[in-house]
Length: 137
Image (cartoon, rainbow, N blue to C red; front, side, top):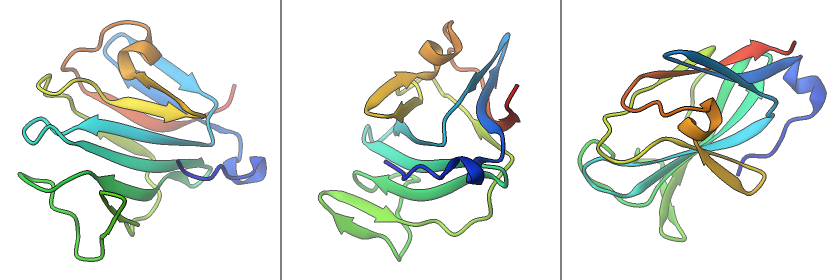
């Protein structure tokens, strides 16, 4: 999982999930987002940091290749995972879609993984969920 930035790197922000009928804030500095590809049925993982600049994608991993999930040329096969460090600016918001065909997005932090339904507190089904930074209360 991603290394946690220091408190000063976070700048008073939390991670928020917004979906139909709910918003949930989590005080996380770093997390791993995990999902299963709906066609290939293999896991994909992304390590993220929550900073005052936005959500930073630190590293991506995919357990295999196939329909719409080809790793980039710079990816390296390490312990059965294609791994790479995406080069993109921090984002204020990330939209997570869910086809309902492969289970839910899972968020892992400090050795524990939970589905977005568990985090939000009710089933989210195939609805879109927005993952974004939010100001600490």
